[in-house]
Amino acid sequence: MTDDPRQDVRFAFGENWRRFLRTVDEARIAAAVGSLQTMLERGDLNGLRFLDVGCGSGLFSLAARRLGARVTSFDVDPQSVACTRALKWQFAPGDADWTILEGSVLDATFVKRFEPFDVVYSWGVLHHTGAMWEALENVCALVAPDGYLCVAIYNDQGGASRRWAVIKRTYNAAPAAVRWLMAAVFFVGHEARQAMIRAVRLKNPLPFRDWAAKKRERGMSPWHDAVDWIGGYPFEVAKPEEVFDFVRQRGFCLTYLRTQGGGYGCNEFTFRRHPCPPPEAGHRSRPLESPRA
Image (cartoon, rainbow, N blue to C red; front, side, top):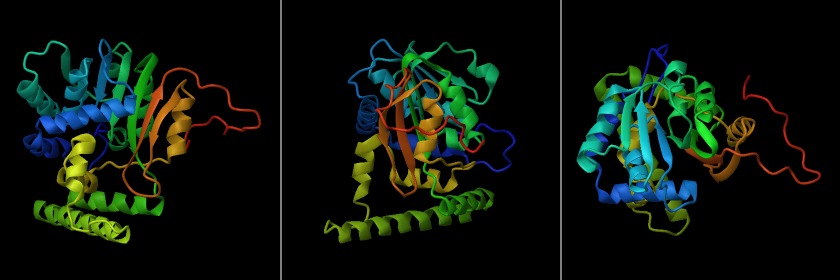
């Protein structure tokens, strides 16, 4: 998903999702359902209103429907919207409790049309808008009292993140053959690195061992994720504490956290819209301020 029309170089997220749709089956859907259950720490979403911001392929909108939520999905990318509609047609035809729209999380008029939702979900989206903190501000406002906000934001690796931004911009400006080669080199290098890590840990070092685990974890595809990673531009990052502080200042309490340590990839957060308990005696919290203001 890319929201900012000011960006002159953008990745074709919808095209990548269109190719991913060919791989979607009941096993991937079940994995997506399990991922939502883990992030929200609940077994179902019966009766809840679920907003999928930057719905992409629509896989997690479908997962939310399987859990009983009434779902609204939107994306700024027309191809992503088309992918979500195609997924709905295949797995939930005629479902009146699943609405799919085209729109931008940065469009104040569009965002204000919604009543607050019980769950607002935006995994790996806001850092591709070109205005990440503004987008995060907007999704916070869409969460109902006592509702949940689930977001995943790229981890800030300092200089490495700046180098990745250059690589991503180069990828999107390159001819198709060069883009394919860059993605292939990254993918093979990533698999080789993972094999070496497994060997050091005295585990089976054969390549591609993580493919099945990736499918089980979120229902995703390693190859399509690799293309999304190297091509995903605009590209912004944040440290976990920056996201935590920003959302906490807006009346939320952290309920789930999964970080990447010092690595690349997304840190995952679930917040609930109610005040956090006061800090223990002797604990000093950081002053309230917006990141990189």
